[in-house]
Image 1 (tube, rainbow, N blue to C red):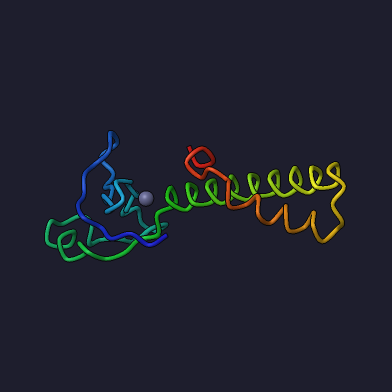
Image 2 (image 1 turned 45 degrees about the horizontal axis):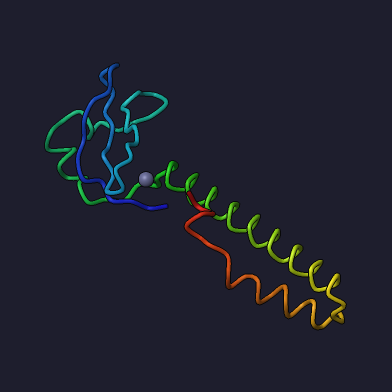
Length: 113
Ligand SMILES: [Zn+2]
């Protein structure tokens, strides 16, 4: 997920970390020949990159976990409602409608916390 750089600091090993608008940090090391970012070694260089976007791996991981939790909750709701519909003697179409209606009552606050 793309996030704007809003500042910088160094970590305990003196490597530069970009501070992202989401509150997460992302290392922006200058470690030639593996990683060449000479701009990070000067204040002007760092300032010139403020506002640029970096991919935030932590936001990606969080979004993936939320999506997985929502899919799991939907699957559980669909299966439970479909089985309840069967127990109640509904036809296949009725069970399907009951399963779909069950999605409206999922409490997302509970799912993503
Ligand atoms: Zn983030």
